Amino acid sequence: MKVKIGDLTKIKTGKLDANASSEDGQYPFFTCSREPLKISTYSYDCECVLVAGNGDLNVKYYNGKFDAYQRTYIIEDNGSGKLYMPYLYYFMEGYIEELRKQAIGGVIKYIKLGNLTEALIELPSVDEQKSIVEILEKAKGILDKRNDEICALDDLIKARFVERFGDPKSNSFGFDKMMLKDTCKVVTGNTPSRSVAEYYGDYIEWIKTDNIVPGLFNPTKATESLSKKGMEIGRIVDRNSILMACIAGSIASIGRVCITDRMVAFNQQINAIIPKRYNILFLYVLLQVSKDYLVEEINMALKGILSKSKLEKKEFIVPPMEMQNQFAEFVEQINKSKVSIQKALDETKLLFDSLMQKYFG
Image (cartoon, rainbow, N blue to C red; front, top):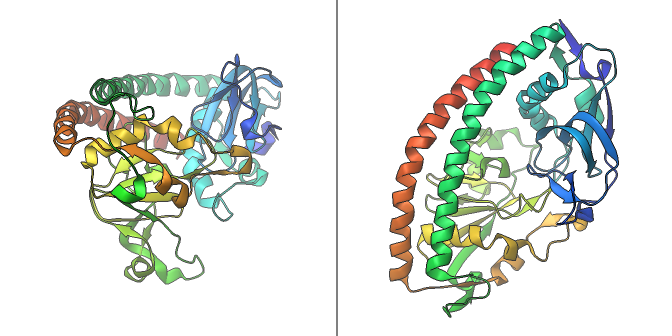
């Protein structure tokens, strides 16, 4: 039996601006970022599922004291006794792709309350919901372990970078520094008109910020593609270019990068960086290590945007190419280890996805 989520829950939104966070806060502050920020006070104390209402749509489960950004939906049980909240969380994890399709708006897409209240969820008994969650938790535990192994290797790469090149902002090793526009070509993506259906098809992948995933060198497969005609007016890059998320609903999402392993189109929330004086692997890590520098002037209250002009004027170290190439060889060796872990992760993800399909359709 399927039931509307609105008949099982009560839904409200947070009330704070995205810049209300505090680095030394003791409570989680949920924004549109995948990772919560911190805040010194709390407005809510409950078990709930949280859905980012704009930008990088995502889902979280939490039970305790917290606060929330004004575009974050807070979903609680309405007291009917028919819903196990962790079960709702897993349903929403699977339903998030449908919400992304329903999202409206211009540069930063958003969903409305009705997108949540009208969603239909399969509703077995509470005991069966708990059994389903137990199975999914075991599969997710394996996924989390594999992801932690990949993150540990990423941390090793960053530690090696700092050892060889120092802090790139303070430039403690005294390398040459140049503005990005003098070492790379920067291209902002675009969105072909949605009113022209023939611009969309299956000719070339159209990458969005969701396809730039922390821990993955390359963009994930796009859910939308452009037609050959759409490609003619879209922005295209070839393999061995860097894609950077430059418009997002949170500071944590801005500055995420990946390296293209194929020709792709990309939307206006992404800037492509095509190196002229950098080894691509060196530049990829340099941008990751420079994340705080990239976002230091961004005011989330005025929307999180790292414009092309601001990005081009950012100054970065330019070590000798020989040093860059040596470091890139180290990254390639580490990446070989990541490949085997990633293969196991992908296999577990297929299992997890099949379970999600079985339980939620």
